Image 1 (cartoon, one colour):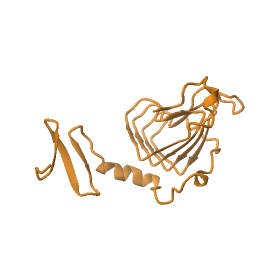
Image 2 (cartoon, helix red, strand yellow; image 1 turned 135 degrees about the horizontal axis):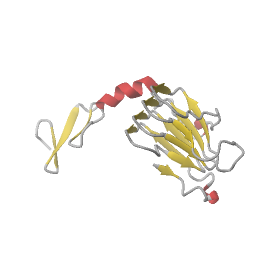
Image 3 (cartoon, one colour; image 1 turned 90 degrees about the vertical axis):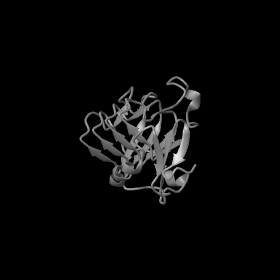
Length: 168
């Protein structure tokens, strides 16, 4: 997930404000997401077996909050310039994340933005450890879809979705 128009598009600064939440990045390599020029709030995402997870560059400001990183390489990574005064540098504040068996960069400069100035999150934020537990209700194959909250599972047979009891 690339949140920018390229590292040379300075006119994008402040316009690419994005929220990413409750996503499961399962063994993807990069850009989960990779942000530039905007404010990005990433919360309650599960990362397992990924390359670099959150990529920072080009003046982005990221708040990574209550995510669960499992066996990832470089959970939060500065992409281009280590100097915060360089325009190609991105900032991140890591808040209440869980890192289990991770290696590489965790670039947390404790600088982000006040999310509560834009929207409420108190009703949506899960604890980081719960993100891993709740991922078990997420479908694990291409043939099964559903939600435990609604108490039914839907499976695809020859392109036509059917519920468990066979009624569509």
